[in-house]
Amino acid sequence: MEELIPIAFFAMIAGIAIVPGYLKHRERKEMQATLRASIEKGQPLPPEVIEALSKEGVKAPPTAHSDLRVGVILLAVSIGVALFGYAFTFISGFEESKVSVPIMGLSAIPGMVGLAFIILSAFNKNKG
Image 1 (cartoon, rainbow, N blue to C red):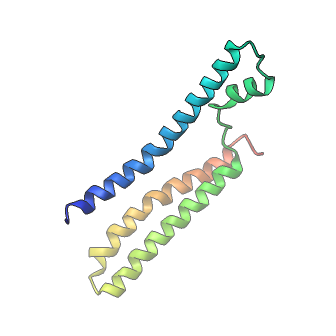
Image 2: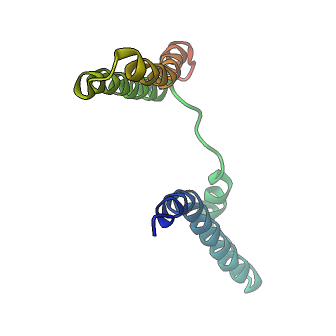
């Protein structure tokens, strides 16, 4: 029974990663079938449909505001993880170097990525 816990955990992660892609694929397939049927019947395609299909895969470039927002969120995550390591040291009674140093080192990863996003927001040409 205990073997099912890790299997369920990894199945949940796989489901979270795979199910949205499958649903999007199925929706796109149904849209293509609908368009194909309307073309075979000789109905003209509205320009809005053609424009929506051409813009579907194109993402807007990141703006300075979105870069700053992501950077601040990652810095907050980093500070939260570091505070967790600091608080865990005092609650558990372990030596400081055994617990807090690895956790604070781990918190440096999102912190540095967040700092990079904040710096990128200053240099981003898309200010809108």
